[in-house]
Image (cartoon, rainbow, N blue to C red; front, side, top):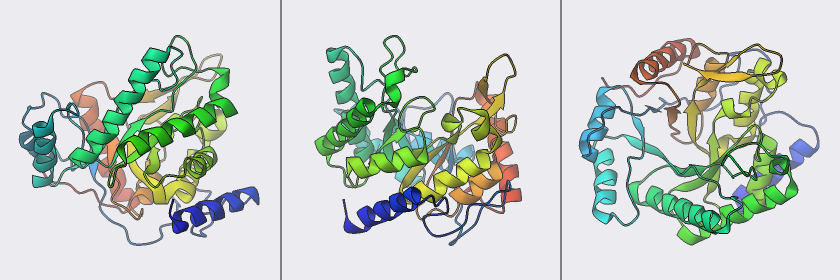
Length: 326
C-alpha cells in the first residue's frame, strides 16, 4: 500500500475513533435530503444496465449500449482462456467508449465444502484476471457466508472476527494471484455479512493492505434497519465521505418498506422506493474517478427503461449530467 493511501486510511480511521462523522475531506455531513456537499468539479456520470437480446459480437454489443443510452456495461460472458474474445471485448468496448464497469463473480468464498471453496476461489481469481484483460473497473463478489444452505445467506458468524480475517486473507490471495495493474477487486457490503458499513469496510481496507483492493458501492444492501431506511441520505453521505476515493463501481436499485409484523424491505423499480437519488447522483458526480452507475435486479426491459428514465429526471433536480448518447 502506498504511503498516501495508508496515511489517508489511518487519518480517516483516527477521525472515526474520535467520533468525527464528517467527510474525509473535511466537509460536514448534511442532514437534509438533497443537501449533500458538492466539492470539486462535477463530471457526467456513466450509466449502465443489461442489454437484452445481446449480440455476441462485442463491438456490436457496445454500440447497442450506446443506442439505448448507456455508456457503461456489465462484462459479457467470457472465459480466461478465451484470449481472442478477451481482446475483442476490450477493443470493441473501447471503440465505442463504453466502460466495462465490473466482472461479477457471485459465489461463496467461505463455503463449508473445501472443494467448492477452492473452486470458488479460482473462479474469482479468474474473474479478476478477466477484468484486467478486458479493461473493466473491477471484479466484484460478496465476502461470502458461513450459511450452510444458501450461498449468501445470514449466519451469526458472518459478523465475527473469524469471518473478517477470512475475508481479508481471501482478498489478499485473489489480488496476489493476479497482480492487476488496472482492475480492482472489491467486496459488496451486505446487511448481514461483513463488511456491513463504511467503517467496517475501511477497517477491511487497512487489513487487506493492497492497492488493488477497492470499494463497490450498493447502498441498498446496507439498509438493514428502520434507522438506515429513514436516514438513507445520511448513510449515502457516510459512504461517500469515508469511502469515496476508492469507489470504482456502483449499483442502482431502490427499496420499499413492505409493512408486516416484522421489518421487511423489498427491492423495487427505481423511483418506487425511498433511496435519495438526488444525494446519490450529486455525490457520485464529484468522485475523483469516472465511476459507473449500473442498474440491476429489474424484472425485464420495461423496468430497466423506467429506471433509466427516472434517473434522467432525478439528474435534472440534482444538477448533474449523464453521459448520454441516443
